[in-house]
Image (tube, rainbow, N blue to C red):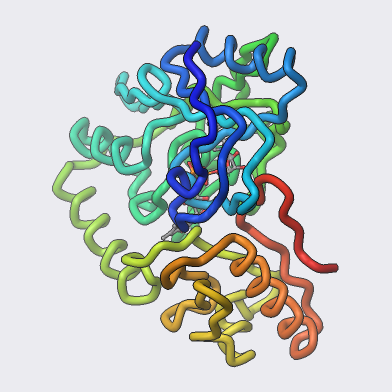
Length: 291
Ligand SMILES: Cc1cc2nc3c(=O)[nH]c(=O)nc-3n(C[C@H](O)[C@H](O)[C@H](O)COP(=O)(O)OP(=O)(O)OC[C@H]3O[C@@H](n4cnc5c(N)ncnc54)[C@H](O)[C@@H]3O)c2cc1C
């Protein structure tokens, strides 16, 4: 198994920040993946799986871990009847394209989620009142010593959460879709993408939603907007002038800039609304929010 040393996570994350990974493996098959996981275990290295890095913030100092990115067979997609089988590293865009080509619908909601099938399981990603738990049938979960299929109910999926452990990797995902004419899928996707573009900074470097929406009527974005945070900048990180629950890399941002902005946002939401905002973005390496 080939390992790359010192690859900056800035290259693997959509926000474009993050220092070097101790080691990076790009397994192409299940056996290569398990080799990599055993290597990490034997060397006492932490494990970080990276999909498209679209909900990840990595420490500027780097990450003392084996970073794994699924490629080859582990990013392939095929269709069997109404089942779409995707490698954990398959992008949502490719899954959707294959589903449409096969006359299958149900996955349209994922059109604006720029991640992978496996990352979607970990985060129980969702949009427009649907999430992975609505279409996921089962997932192949792999660790250094085992590979087992887990049915949807065994994955403990809830709002942007799954019960997957830190050393568990989703290698394959099976989605149960439904017959739908490709033209209809195309129309639905065009409509959702247009809605997205009108409300979110889709053409900027971000890591998606910063905070989970707290219970109640008011979403995190609206709350932070009412705190006057739209356009607030620290270093190269900017609270999106378009949607306050996004942080943009406005040029030269560091992960530390992003964390400082998040601290400021949480402070203001606490003062004004008495709400403790919980981060949605996954932290990798030595990153922490203030209490
Ligand atoms: C512009 C933009 C819009 C977005 N809109 C949405 C939205 O509408 N809804 C939404 O839910 N999210 C949204 N996101 C966030 C993000 O796209 C999702 O959370 C996505 O599912 C993350 O997938 P990923 O493959 O990029 O995972 P990464 O960001 O690479 O990783 C996220 C977490 O999943 C883990 N992980 C990744 N792959 C695997 C795997 N194969 N097995 C086990 N663990 C894994 C990582 O270790 C990490 O903990 C948006 C992001 C951006 C940049």
